[in-house]
Length: 342
Image 1 (cartoon, rainbow, N blue to C red):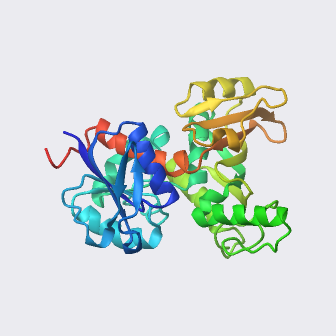
Image 2: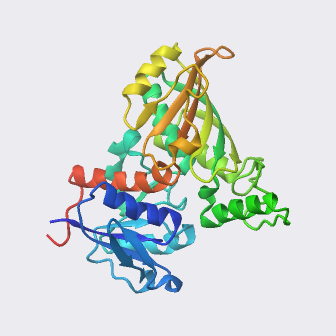
C-alpha cells in the first residue's frame, strides 16, 4: 500500500521540481495531488509521464492524505500547515515560518535525521533555507572529525532563489542589454543582469540581511548551537545553483588531504578538486544534480586549524525540493508514518 501525497504550490519552481523528483526517485505514492491557489485551478503540471490538473487548496480535505509537501510561501504555510497537521497529515514545509519554532524539527537528512522524531508535536517538519542546506551538508562530516568553531561564508545565490519572477527578470534584463533597450527591474533592488547585488531579503537592525541571519540561526539549530557563523549573501546573474566560499576554523588540527578524504566518504557530497584549470565545479554543472559539490579545498594559514573550500549545489533540488522528499523518505524508512489507506 502506497502513500497519498499532496504538493501545495505545484505550479511554482519548487513545486514542479518536487513533482519531478517524486517521479524520478519512484517515491512510494499511490496518489499524488497537485494543489495551488484558485487562479491556478485546472493548470496542468507534469508528474513523471502523467499530467496532473491542479486543485484548489482552499477546498481540499487532507484527512485522507499522508504527506503534504508545502511550497506556497510563508503566509500560506502559516495559515494552512497547522490546519493540515491537525487532520493527521505530516507537513514538510519549505518556507521560513516554522524553521525556528522549538516544536518543529528543522531537518537535513544527511546531517540531523534523528531529530525528525519531534515532528508529532505539530505534525510539521521544516526545510532549511537553500543556502543553509548545502552548507551544513558540507560542514557535518568535518564537524564530526575536527569540531567547527567559526564559519565565515560568502554566498553567490542564483536568481531562482527568488522564484520565477527572479528568473524572468534576469532573462528580460539580459535581453534588454543586448538589444540596447531600457533595463527595467521589479523583483530586485538593483539591476541583476551583468551585476551582483549584496542584498538578499530585508535588512535587519544590526545591518545583516534576513537571509544572512537565517544561515546563522539555522546552522546552529541543525548542527550545533556553539558554532559561530557570519555570512554575506549575494545575488548573482545565474539562473540555477547557489555557490558558497567557506572559511572554517576548527578546534582540532586539520589538513586539506584529511578533509578531502572525509568529504569524499560523506553522504550527499561529491568532491571535484583538481589543482588545474577547470578542476572544480561551477553552478552551471551543478544544475539538475542532487549532490552538494565541494572544490578548492585548502588550508587557511590565517587562523589556527583553518580550512577554506568552494561549495556548489542546485538550490531548487537539495536546497528545497529534494531535501523535502528526502525528509519524507526518512519518515517512511524509519516507519514513523504508515499509509492511512491501509
